[in-house]
Structures are given as structure tokens and as C-alpha cells.
Length: 320
Image (cartoon, rainbow, N blue to C red; front, side, top):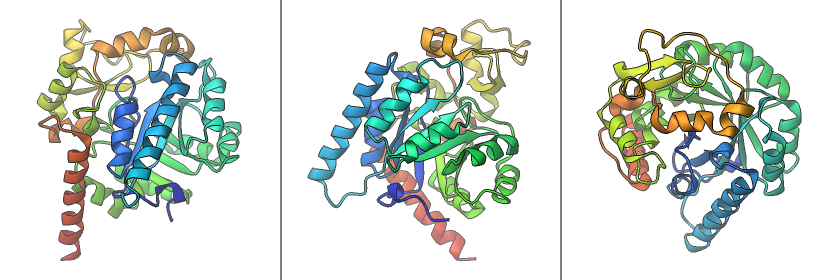
């Protein structure tokens, strides 16, 4: 499978994932300028008007960077849309994506054919988050260009399936772009994902501890201090199962014995009204990849490290 043309100028097959309250203009632009794909959630801006301002700012900064650095590898930018019937902003935010021809649209919590067709109308690419085969089959029916396999160990609203099993299962029927997510933190992990058959690696947690991240300083420090055992998969914060750091849950008074009680979420109420936003400001999400993170660094430096590790990993594997 060849990647869509929007990825032709990338330095490294990596997407810096859109993270709730963490990904903004600075992180997105820095990732693209470093030669990987940079993304942010539309709902990180409280209004559609604010979201449109972010889109315009990202476009303008990347266009300026390309003019000043015509030979530099530049990754595409993308936007995450919550495609769920309870998200009242979905249509307005989609129209903004179409109006400004956002290159990559990542849909979550619903694969809708009309959304895919709207993005395809201007030549855009649609990737969809999935955690199991059933969701992948529905996304394929909707006509998406790629699937993001959110496997066990990923940050945020993660799945629980092992990446080897899920990727092998999806590749039996899906011929589009496959993006692998779940505790990918190094260039070696990127090489491993490619060797498994993924086209792109999806990294979220690794980009929390960067200078350009919108995460609070204490949040970044907790990511650097945490280990894989500290990550707890629970629906208590939003109603949808997600991975959070135990230290953060304890600090916010959650009953550690009840973290796996089932919940319910209305994205219209919780995301746009701010309930979840308020919760996630102090209850911090991360994936098992925290075990590989020890310091906060600029994104340009991080991508340099990832690229060096990736090339060395490819060389080392070719020796066998």
C-alpha cells in the first residue's frame, strides 16, 4: 500500500496524535516543520470560530515555513473530529475543514459516509480511529482512506487488543493505509510498526513531554516520572474507557477500587459544555509509552532522535 500523496514530503512515517487539551497550534506546526504529520482536535478550541482561527494560523505558518525552507521535509497537518450524534459542533467544524481544505481529517466515535465524501470532495484524506474489527469494517464501508488501530497501551480512549493480533486481523480485509497506535515511543518502535505491516506510527504520549505541548508543567513531569504499571484503563472520567496515570487519579480523589465501573458519555454535554475538559485538566491521560520518557524536549529535537533511532533500527534488522 502506497501512502496518500499528502505524506510524500515526510521525513519519518509518524503522526503526532491529536490529544485532548494537549495538542494546539504550536505542537502541530512544530511537528509538521520537523517532517512528520501534526494534528489537533477541533474541540480543543471551545468554539467553531476559534477552531477556524487555529486552522488558518496553522496553514499560514506552514506556508511561510515552506517559502523560507523550500527544500525542507514538511509533514501534513490534520484535524480530529468527533463524529458522534451528540456533538453539536460536528457539522460546523466539518464545514470549516472543507472550506479550508484540511489535508487530513481524523474521525473518532463514528464512521460516517457523508463526512468522508465531504473531505474527499476537495481531495482530503480521512483516517478513522478503531479498536476492533467491527469498527474497522464499518469504517471501511464508509469509505475511509486509512484506519488508526488504537491498541492496548495507547493513551486516551484506547483499546485493549494486542497490536500483533489486531493488525493481522485488519490486514485480512482492509487495503487502505494502516496507522498503528499503542505505546510507540522510539524510532525503534516506528521501525517495528513498519515491519509488522503498518504504514505509519501514531504517537501521542511521547509528544506530551515536549516544549510545544499545551500540557501543564506538572503533567509533563508526571509523564517523565511514570512507568507502565501506573497506567489504569477506566471509564470513570468521561464514561468512555481511557488510560490515565494512577498518580493523577489518586490526587483527584477517585476511589481506586471503583475505577472500572461502567459509565456513559454524552459528547454534546461533556465535551462542548466543558465537564470533561475540566476533568482532564487535572486527571491526566497517558499510555504505556511513559516508560520510555525521561525528559521534556523540543519537538524538533525529539524528531531528530526518532529519526536517528529509526535508521539505526532498520540497519540492525537488515544485518540478519
